Length: 207
Length: 346
Image (cartoon, rainbow over all chains, first blue to last red; front, side, top):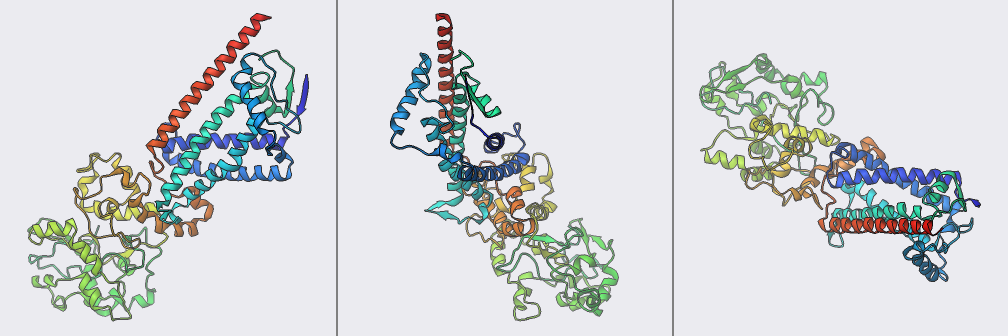
């Protein structure tokens, strides 16, 4: 059995607060977008969504600061040279190896806690999608101040479509994320690691 | 709305003392000034038109010597009569407090009303003084002490409105500026008035007469989901004025009838929200100053249901989410079978 302390307290706190804000935004956003008053009344959903959006912005800034000064940023550096083969190995494991009890192609270490697929998806979400989602959200909050048109389109419409598209992509990300955390040594290995901070392997014979 | 003497026809009775109407001035704002309309009521006499200081108020407006003679009778709240023809009560009472907070506070009774009213009892013919908001404002454009806003554009709009058209059809019925705007209490709403109060003040003008719309299923609005909720959130004129040529600070007076009015939900509940732009845009800056940056961001009223709706993106999103859920379920089931197989093999 091996045990690695991968997730310091600040990182776990950030992760779980981020998760709460994320799901609040998802629930209120769905309620507002589809007019689901039975889910959350519109009058409640709007200010809660706005507040959560502001908190998500702060959380994202904290993530950037944590990565820049807390040493966590190294996990999001993509190694272009080894990336293609790492991706192939990782995808092959998920679509085939995992069913035939092949060993996991990636081994967690304090230097590399994310496999190639995780690195790529987290970098994409946190550094590409999240900024656009946040900017479009803030643009919504101050929609009255936006110019009427942008590139020949109604600015609010562009903002709304960008926000909507990003929201759908984030929903997809979270679905996949929730499933992928069950693909550790046991279905709960990764979840426990994010709760305790310790990544433990070799404790079970489960697949 | 109290004190709106609309029905001033020849048959005004002998007691038509001063026929409560003074002035010509009426609706809306000068070009370039915020214009939502309100009558000065006890609850909204805060900002906007400052009241004349008490000492000065004794000398001008209804405090002037001539006006005091009028107010000896017209201050009474019960000053009214029943019109013989229409059987409606014509209110002749002037709320002095509201007048002192109105845009016309500096005008004495005689500045607008016919000198013939000096005779008492007033003659019936005195009621035919033909007061005109547009005319009076135009005549006094050169008076630097008054500089009233020009109302010509509003007049043009009004002439195309359903009110004017129906009045003409009815042979010059009793509709005029005074039907909606009480010149003795009129003042524009202050710039920092919250949207909900703007909506309430504006819609109050309409619903004072259109009382039939206060029913649970308001006439002509059966197509509109949650009418009460709409009337709390948007002004009647947001749907009942033309979409084209809207000016941010001057709501159109071209009120449209049922058939011409907007009944397209998408005009509000969609991309541009054009119908609502006029209501919210000019409020945003003031709200931000009043409430602060953060509070404005959190409590702004700009989002309406459907604003972000795109059936194409939603369908694609739902389809992809469905596929992902199926894929994940299948993958999980496969892992479960593999796990069972592994257990059996041991």
